Every structure is written in structure tokens, then in C-alpha cells.
Amino acid sequence: MDEATAEQIGEIARLYYLEDRSKVEIGQRFGLSRFKVARLLEQGRQEGIVHIEIRGGNAYQDLLSTRLATHLGLRSCLVVDSGGSEIQIRERIAQAATDHARTLLEPGDTFGISWGRTMRAIGERLVDLPPSLAVQLTGTVGNDPSQSPVEVLRSITADSSVRALAIFAPLFAGSAQAASVLRADPAIASTLAHFPELKLAVMSVGSWRPSITQLRHFLSDADVAHLDEENAQAELLGIFLDADGRVIDGDLADRRISASADDLLRIPHVIAAAGGVQRAPAIAAAARSGLLTTLVTDDQAALALLELAPVEQPALRHAGLGDAAS
Image (cartoon, rainbow, N blue to C red; front, side):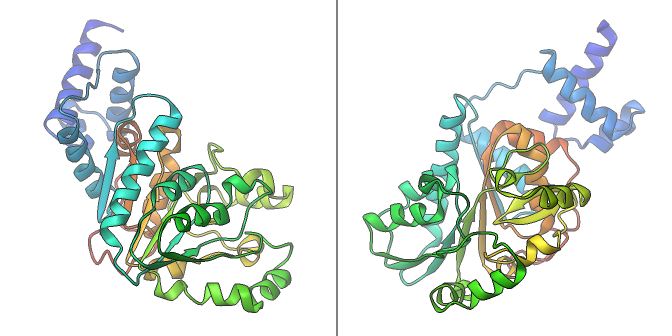
């Protein structure tokens, strides 16, 4: 790289990171497209011209959280430090999500939680809650009990006055008819009937492209082909979204046993806990869907999300966001 290019990248980075100028503004100043500005910012980080050093801890995270919430059109974002191993980052995300959930729950509330490694870490921390009801948001995936939503519920109810309602059924039934029969089962129906009263839902975000989701291993070749054809990008509770946040319908959706997109739109607080730079496009798709109100992520994922186009008009309108995402 020549000296002139390095100096230009340094000036672009100063305007973007320190003066909070948009990529469009910067592009106009230098006669570049916003996409070229984004590529130069990424190049600067890759080649060491731009080095982001986190000092003052909470002040930096708070600033990034505010910028990200505005960028994604969400009510709030919580950003944690991305230093350390993947497990350490996951633990910090889980702790931040748990702390936030605690501030929202009051005695008598009903809340829902999904499955996966991050949800397991959250479940282990959601103890000593006020008397409330925890509801499983999805059927079970696979045969590993350590990752199942039932195990997450067990962790929550072990040392607290929380009651739990599980869904003893698969996330995806073998056919739409089988799913209908399962949903009508009295034990399962009684759990699903509590979805309209949920005050809070906590879930992870799966990425279809690149593949960072355990679901791919449990879907048929036909299901995978359909999702690829529909340009699937993200997954929430088995709800698949394209890059624009639109819900992908079809046979797979008809076979799903979980809270629906309509259910999520009615829940006052919907928290997604997900980190990692590679997962950024999926997180952005989840934000564009309009199904979320809050994101908990790490600072490197946050910076990657800020490099993507802002959310200007979500695919759906969450009742709790009003005009915040427009």
C-alpha cells in the first residue's frame, strides 16, 4: 500500500470512528461510494493502520451501544468486551443479557426462553428471580439434553420460585399435519396458550450464511435447498429470515412448533443475545425483521454491524418500538 492510500484510510477512520461521520458523508468528501469507504475502513483494520484500543471500559461500550441501537433501529443494545476466547465472550454476553432481563421482570410475569449454548449460560444465571412463569419458546432440537430448552428451564427453576412450562415436542415435526396434531395435544397446547401473555423473550440468533447454526444438521436436503433458494440469512426460534429480514414461509414453517413471528411482535421485550463478527449479517437481518427490541453482543460484532447498511424500515413493525426503527 502506498503512503497516500494509508494517509487517506487514516483520515477516513478518524472521521468515522472519532467524529461519528457517516460513510455517505465521508464518501462525498473524498469522491467515493459508501461501499468503497466501508472497504477502506475494513482494509485499515486488517493492515493495522486502524487499531481500536478499548480504554475506560464501560464508557466505550456505552457509546458503542447507543450508536448501534440507533443504527439497527432497536430500543436498546448492550455491548460487551470481545477480548478472550469464544467461551469467555459468550459468558459475558450471557451475563449482560441476564442482568438486563432481571431489570425487566417483576413478580407474576411470564417470560420465554429458547435453546442453545448462550441460552444455557443465561439459564444458569437466571436464578433467584421473583415468582414468575418461564415458558419454553420452541420444541426441542436433536438429542443432546445439555442444549435443549428443557435443560435451560431446569437451570432457571432449580434455585428460584419460578414455575416452568415445557414443550415436549420437536421444533420441526415430520409434516404439517403432524405439527398440527402436536399443537393440539392438551399438554403442548396449554404451554402455547401462554405465548400471548409473555412480557419478555430471550433468544439467540442463528446464521444460515455463513453457517453458524445447529439446525442445519437436523434438516433434510429438501429443507436446506429451499432455504438456500430463498436466500436465508438468519434464524430465530426456527423462524428463518432473508437478508432483508423477511420471514421465509413454506413447508418448514408449517412444521415448526414454536412461538411465531406474530407472537414475537406482541411481546414487550424481545432480547437477542448473539456475538461474533461472522454472525453480523444474520444479526442485521434479525434487526431488519422488526422482531427484536434489544440486542446483546460484543464490540467487534458491533463494529461489523456498523459497517453494514442501517435499518431504515423493518420488514415488520414491533408493537413496542413505535416509530423508533423508521
